[in-house]
Image 1 (cartoon, rainbow, N blue to C red):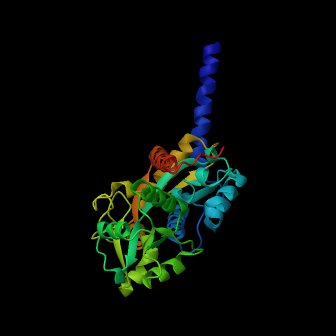
Image 2: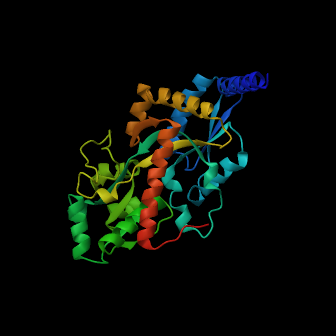
Image 3: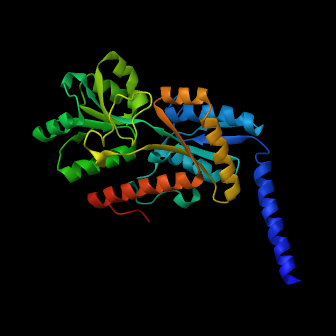
Length: 318
């Protein structure tokens, strides 16, 4: 009798779980975005919000919470503790936090991967006036002119990884800090800095003027919108590879079946021709994936960051 009761309870639990996934959402969903309006991630979130709201029959609202290298958005997401509030962010916004802070002001374990969405195209660019045509040209110039060339980056993880590469190879470049990417790109175009690594989409206005040249993308695959640009691996520098991984996180209390449902819906939206066209135009490759796919890709990035931290002699915050 006890075995029958136990089995019945288990079946009831499974049905309740399945029911919760099918009933979700029962009210508006919020996407908390870690970057400001007009950014590639913001455009992506809004495209998916529009498509998913039609699938779900509920409003999907995009809420921009830029600042603090992603911390403002992460804390807003964790503080909500609501399965209708999801974090839509590039993982590069926080991958290096444990090595950049004495104490990380949030619990990384509170971010449960739901869906991989896109890979932002990240690229290395130089002023056209330098006359460089490849990554080899750039790094050879850095080698022959130690300490004379300046560089900048948009996200801390790209910055962190390039610093590790300079350390490993013994190259010497001076990093210039910027509060905003537009100023950095403008200075690059005028030759006031000699290299920039960041989102390809942000570079395109100056690229169209002919004042800057993109040498390579850091992604594992070429940009669908600029297939003529080689990857860093193809250029002979595989250690500079880093995908601009963008995805959706949910609260850890969210059931696995619900995470799988959301990921499947995201994948359906990612197959819509209009969304694919718009995302390619904003410098992204569409790459939807399951919670497991997203978790593995995020873990791979953490391993890469851990390796760089070890090289730089940095300890992880407790």
